[in-house]
Length: 121
Image 1: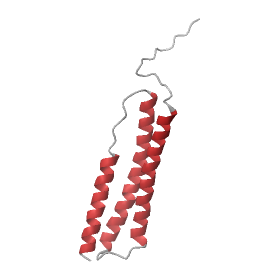
Image 2: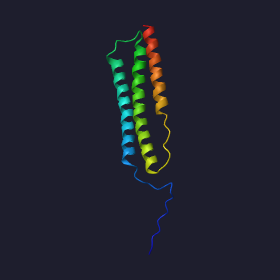
Image 3: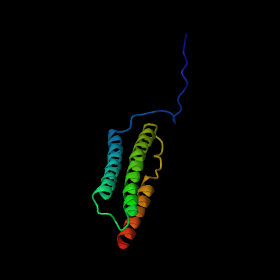
Image 4: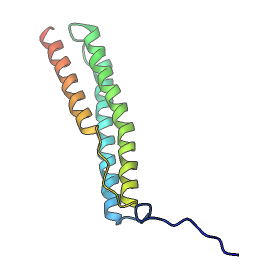
């Protein structure tokens, strides 16, 4: 009795990528995590160590902005790492990611709010 397995198409075939690409993907993931830790530390520092801006609300907005951006980047970094790894294993194009735009926009917003709060102090 012969069992027939479904045929794999070339698109579905999985191959182990060159270890250098896997390690590069991990280094990129760790870079995003370091950035997330930096934002986390910045949020805690602004919230607890920095003297308040003219408004306590502005201090909280800056601190919470850093903390939320840190959490989003940490989750996004994992999703990006996993997507790139799966694409490499399946020999597909690498997925796009909104992380860079999100980090740039989030940092710009935090910088503008901080600047305005300092000027008004």
